Length: 438
Image (tube, rainbow, N blue to C red; front, side, top):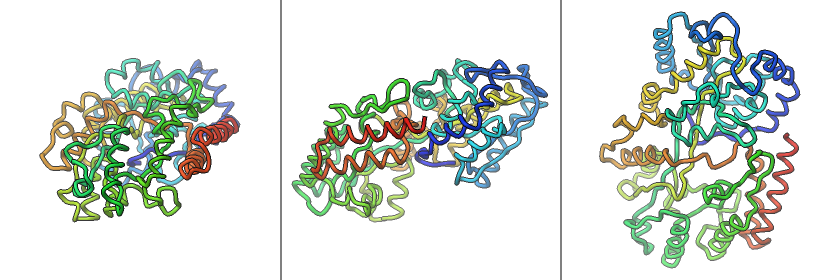
């Protein structure tokens, strides 16, 4: 599924389902000598290292839109490896996480699988994915570091999928509003601290719009370098004095009127919509966001400046995993590498607004050189940001946990409880949820 942000899924439920229904699967893997997620062998080819035999490649809601592209990749692979046969199997967008879990529990996991990190975690926990750190130790020379790190999970030793296509955010600024409200668009904020300083100046000059419109989340703690989950992946650890300091900064901003009141309400429109409507002067978005902003509000044309994301850019990742149960695992591994090589990813990135995860893609001028338009500048800026972008939200942190954290932070921003107490309460409840899912 081509999307700008990885979906948050029911990780714990997934692990529980596999642990209950698939315990025998884990034992079977060990019986084949494939314990620890390593490769297994057997079948009618490929298990002995030869790239032959039939495999299935499962994608997530990519057809019919990208049918021709995928057919071309498969045909090229089969031409390069006579005797290999790849069957494409696309799944609908809705319910994909449960589909994958059902396949795993029934021992029918496809050989090569499109998996975002949070879908890969429950499979990795029960040794159903090939550990690429063991089977392909050179992958660090091929893919950007953030993409690989997205498939390295706390408490598990390994890398559990190839990063496929990526996306990240950059900043968009309304230069007309900034100028009218006492700011210099030539001196755009580059850090959170500069953002709050400029938001205060903006508020002193304008009261009918705002520079910023958001409440903090767990990604802000990770962006500040706070360890939000322990090394074992068993407890969240974000309730620190440093995180409380971040929340306090938002408390002060909210109470001083630097943020709209609606930011804590259920009817909050979101930063992007408010930016499009001219109610706020800053938003984040992917490389195509400029075109969307100006399409929805043509009056913004020529009034938007861009710069890199504040501090550490967020990284959104789709990946390709290899089933440890594959009967043709050599073929499956070779195909997963082929799908994600620079040539094939570069071609994909030219027909849809995603970026390749391969280091060598920096040599392709399509991604590294602008055509001089704002859209072109945004594409190059976002692509360059990938080298330092990180997946900031732990895969264990699901949407329900995000709601709990948001509710507690809202209490703090309204002045009902201290920020430290809000974080302690959220962490306690979220850790209980994590423990219940184990």
